[in-house]
Structures are given as C-alpha cells and as structure tokens.
Length: 228
Image (cartoon, rainbow, N blue to C red; front, side, top):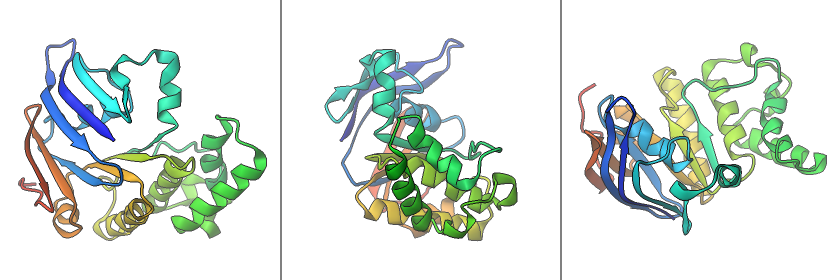
C-alpha cells in the first residue's frame, strides 16, 4: 500500500533526515517506527501525508507518487490518511462532538452522515457520554481519544500517529493502545512513531528502526531496542 524507493530528505540547514530509505508497508499492517531522538522518524511519517516532501526518491501511496502531487491534490490524499499528534490539536471552543464533526464538515458531508459517523467513532473510543464536554474538561487520555476519533471519522485507510502516548501516564497509554488495536482490527493500517518501550515490547507488531536517517532494523514482533 505504501512504498518508499530510495527516499532522501535534506533540509535547508543541511540536516539529512532520511538517507536513501526503502520500505514497503502492506494494507492492514501495524508498524512501529522507533529510534533515538533526531533519527528521522518524524520526517519519515510526515512525508507519508505530504507534510514534508522528499528531496529525491519516490513515495508511492496506493499507486500514486505522492512526492509529485500538485498542492491542490494534497487534500484528496489526506482524506485517505488520519493523523494523530502528541499534543492533540483540539479546537478549545468546540465540544468533543463538534471537534470530531468538524473533520467531516470541511469535506461537506451531509448532516445525517455526520451524526451517524461521529456517534459511531465516539462509541468506539469510549467517549459517548463526554460528547457535550469541552477539551479543557477532559483528562489528557480523553483528549487523545477525541484526537483519535477525529482522525478516523472519515474512515481513512491509514492512521499515522506521532508519539500518541508521549504526554500520557503509563495506565492511560495502555488504554490508548487498546483503541489503536481496535482500529487496526477493522482493517486500518497503523503507522506509529513512538519512544514507548513498554508498549512496543508488549503489544507485538512490526518494528522499523531508524537511525541516522536509514532503516537499521525491520522485523515482525521485534523489541524496541533502545535505552530510554
């Protein structure tokens, strides 16, 4: 579903974030992207949803070379990809329901479909009873659940998560991982950059390790492999 061919990314300040990466990710996989800080993990995942563009190489998403997309074509790509951030990025003046619904309103879904889809995803992430609350009335874990619900409400084929448990306590992190497991079980591809050693070592999936902008390890059910 996703293929990188000799992907090289050099920033204007001279930093080489990815140095000839080659990888294939199949539909429905759950992939952890691990490695030390500054290794290139964030650049790797940002290039998949076209937040960053490679200096050279190809990134194929379902037969489309997204590195060559025109800017006006990027929104169409992003409708197929959900993104979950470490810092939630919720709109503070909107309720839980409204934050999730907003993702559908911007693509002009019908009110009937919005109600149906938002109700479904809030149930999936366990927030049905919090629908009328505002972000500042929620715990960090609940805010992350809203962020996840917003990322999947349009039924994307891929969910990309950048350190989704980074700001959460250990118990809450496990709860959030249960949500990701449910999403993956429905057939959605999950690509997760993480420093959470316990999660990677306990909930086994494919582990892709990046160091110095190159993939140093790629194995099913591997360990985190780095000191924290």
